[in-house]
Image (cartoon, rainbow, N blue to C red; front, side, top):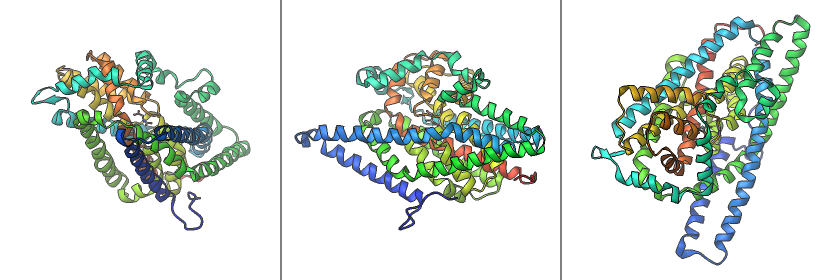
Length: 449
Ligand code: ASP
């Protein structure tokens, strides 16, 4: 079952999405030129504001449709996938390998960020804290939109306990309320795993009936995902247009070096480290894997939400990369919730950058603390846009780096493009885990696959 293609001309979905991305960028740039101060015509600004509002509305509908798929997709795919495993033994092996991949790839990502931010030193100028950026930080409150102020205030309210709530949420008191709360997917996954393992203990025929039930429900969810994805080109067009139109260019000037540091580190992880894992560990062609993952990568880039992308990641991995369901159904939902290489890398670079700007010297122990904190907090960050802001504020405060809120506001102003990239890295890392684990599981062929 492949992705829908434009029936008449058979244009593959990833080309349609790419076209939507390019068209949205062009439209946004043209609109910006048209609304530039001198060129403003009567009512034009209002017309543009109205059109952007409509885009946001339709974009929100598309995101809601994607999110609508998440809970039933996770439940049916985890249960139908794990009920195929050979009891707890097979599951423990799979879980161990997946956890090992997730921890190692996130650690590698953070290390790349750490090395680059120390080499490039984006927060310093001639070895001294960059005063221009310091000024931009202190002015960030005046420039910030209402929305940004509210976001930072909300992130600031979350204390340490809230950030580590994710570990408690693994065992939800009420699985239904966990399912209705976007941030508690881990509880739903853990419950589904336990339920699936329990299913394998039920005597033969009854177990088969349940297995078929969840398998069919999952097949139906896959068809639904295809329907939602048929609207992806429109959805992506309307999501991207306002983002590009509204992204401020002036702040990029002062934060350019920081932006470049994050970008370079993310690209090294995406195009060097993860492909090496594919080539050496899974022994598969990275180019081929990138090709299989195109729709998911483009969707992650456009939505900046790894949770929202999950249904498509699963389809790309199962249909394109041909990873067996018993592996993908476990690694991918878990990965979308806890494995965030791009986010962990970003947190590390952002915190050390702010320390440089604020003139705080970070010794080996302090940097080690930041590395460990980035690794742990990236597990708790939700797969939604700008979610890492909470973790960055938390680490800045725990490291006693001054001006945390002002810095967070300034970073938020240039966050969206970096968020789009780090979300693509997060999703790609999950997909690499799926193929690496699947390859290592090949010798454990199962009768029910
Ligand atoms: N937007 C990211 C994701 O969904 C999380 C973040 O880094 O803010 O994976």
